[in-house]
Image 1 (spheres, one colour):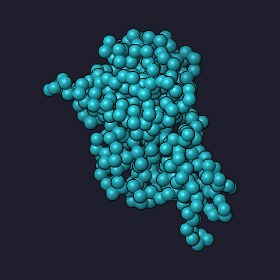
Image 2 (cartoon, helix red, strand yellow):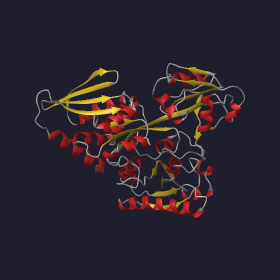
Image 3 (cartoon, helix red, strand yellow):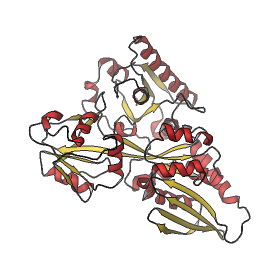
Image 4 (cartoon, one colour):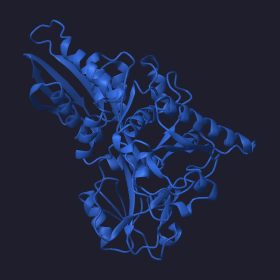
Length: 446
């Protein structure tokens, strides 16, 4: 049986295809999508073309208008449609959404506080009806396989890229100078490094080598035991190199399926589509299409991290490394590659948009024939409250209970539920971002 998302998206596709207002010959129906070049360069055109094919449009063709704008033209039943993909960047794209010059905005980051304030009239941008995570990417830290470095902190990366740290001993590795390998100075990864790690400042390390692409940067590490590269999570790695776990003041998380899709790994970059509360049927049908299995297959073909739910094989030795209390809560289970997070500021849901959509995927996945008879273990975590140690335990239990109630209501068996308080924090501090990352619920498959 199709999931509710698929059924609703299909209905909207039919509505968008059937409602054809009268127009003059030159008044072509147009859908405007503006924003990040990281999304607009390859992923968005591929998604739009597949969406048009799903609605049986014909004569689909790309018409470049400028380096920052592409149009995709199509025809159905003699009526033309133009999808305008503007890619001037996340900030200009979001501003176009606020002004009404675009119906959908592509962002390779979260809107900041100023942007959210400017968009107050658009409704609740945290709602799963207005926030659609398309795919994930991000940065991986790559070293030679013989390098003893096993983990690195974001603060250490910042010091390395600023030139404050130059020696491996400052990073917890072997002696000698770090030879940093990076890709081109322009591009999505470079923008992400500036935004997430260096606070807008470019790398200043003297022993820095630029390469024509990220594969070449990774290949340089395979030849040099003293080299370190920053590449994308989806960059194919050659033999002889490995990606290290990254911490952000808390536990170090590996860039594996569970770490990335849960967004526990601190260098994850979500590719997100935002729309206003009053989207047209055409715009909403496309937005809802992007989170369907069909669209996620397009995401995978584009080499990005898709958001399907699947149970990975248990990693040897993982359970033994967990604290005893945690180990007892997940004994005999394997973690699903996701974590549910909350947004108490939302007016429409207690979850953030990504988590609400992931919950629907989990329910649909658990109802597949191959998962019949299986159940889940639900484990909650919270931020530390130094004034009241019981508060974190109560909060984590409450969050776990909320998820359990949703799952049970939708017919999913839950065998265990436990709140582990502030055990294994992902981020240090008590700021809003640290709380958002630490206050999470994991699902483990039994």
